[in-house]
View 1 (cartoon, rainbow, N blue to C red):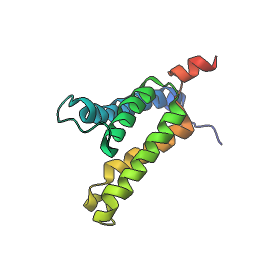
View 2: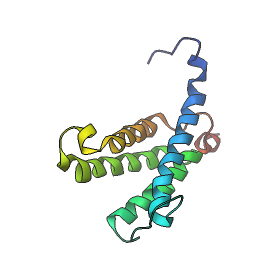
View 3: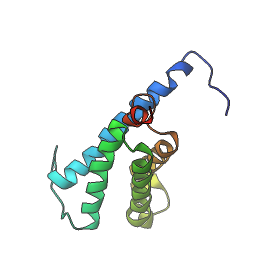
View 4: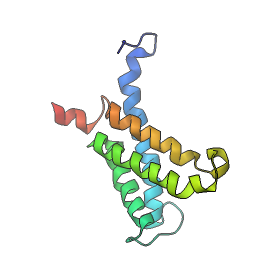
Length: 130
């Protein structure tokens, strides 16, 4: 793979870490709503498919946010979003903008990318590797 060039190229590993942190926190919010009704919303039955999604979102989002076990957590989360898309949204129609599955699709590919790219410079995975 060719090295990136340009005035922002040196920031690439740091921006990856910030991206991972923000996406993990955003995703964790979805789980917190399902499990604890926080910051707003209602809880779901823990032993249900949506409850399992809440567990994956809360704990997977936390792991990705801190950069610990980033690759396996992100891979599981990507799979969760693929299942969500095809189980919930795709039956409503082909186009994500019409079936309201855009966010599930975007999260699926964000976490697939993080499963491949890893946690970046500022991650607990990086500290553990030392």
